[in-house]
Image (cartoon, rainbow, N blue to C red; front, side, top):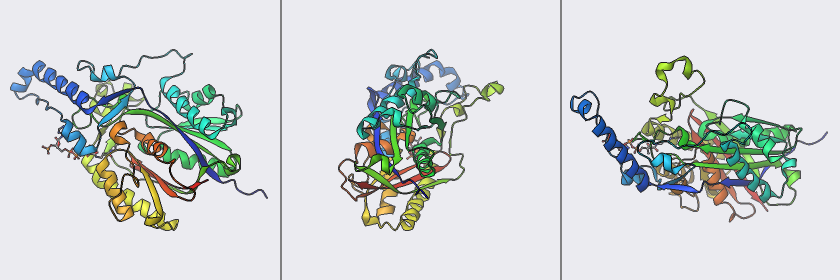
Length: 379
Ligand code: COA
């Protein structure tokens, strides 16, 4: 009887937008919007009918989140106090959609780094928070644009910020089951499209990016350097603390169209308090199951939402304050990029690891949803 194929991570790819917005630029535009709003609504504010909006602060953003800047697909629209939204023109159906294009760029880098051709890819999973449209799936568009195996398959899946780790486990299971030998998981995120840039509590949180992860059967990879997957664990627990109620039924309740809840909304403090213990306990349990001692863990590539959250989680797992080397940060320049965050950290900060080093890719976010992928460097 043929043995079960072993899935490994052979490479990753990254697309970073060319435009970036600093906290200073973002706060200046937010404060200009606030001044406009308050002067336009001066009478209602004086009458007590509505509350005046308050200014945002660079200092607050950096201390509360660790974010200093973010990459975006359209800086001009976001920073225009009259618009406060990225402007991304619709494309004709004959042209590749922008999210698929970002995913293709990241995927091409992953394929090139692995020395693989697109025709070797049997499956594409687009695992992300916000899809271009309901259908056809972006993953199928990516499969077509790359020229993947025409006998293969592709589909979209959404587990919000945890989409990438859920995608990795799904891809690994396809490899184990023999349904595919090479699977691309792509995570294109235009988070600026669902961010309310007029909301002081959250206007600084997100950025845009795309990542790609190539998961393959070990015999496809052979002697080339790769990451063996020691174990994956997924967990979900329902919470209303991070929501986005945008959806196809919105038009059936027109009174709600344009309301704040049709974009990203969260109770950030509650998320912080509830997710830190949930994720720390999940990582600890998985390390016990896999017999990995804290001192054996060389690096953690954590979800990139909040630097203080990551400091706490890493300290609980390692038993001491983690160094940048043990738990690298990318949210300072990328901000929260939803599903892509931990993969950007892995992509930028994994080449220096040596044969046998152990690491953890970990995501957490809306749902709640959380995923861990323990890996070992081979080669
Ligand atoms: N500028 C200045 N002050 C601000 C501000 C801004 N942009 N936004 C909020 N504040 C104020 C608040 O009004 C509040 O003032 P008060 O104390 O007078 O009431 C104070 O700062 C603290 O606000 P709070 O919301 O409690 O801040 P926080 O320390 O919890 O930080 C987050 C906010 C969002 C950065 C943080 O909670 C977080 O990142 N949580 C995790 C979120 C997460 O992981 N989400 C997953 C998303 S996928």
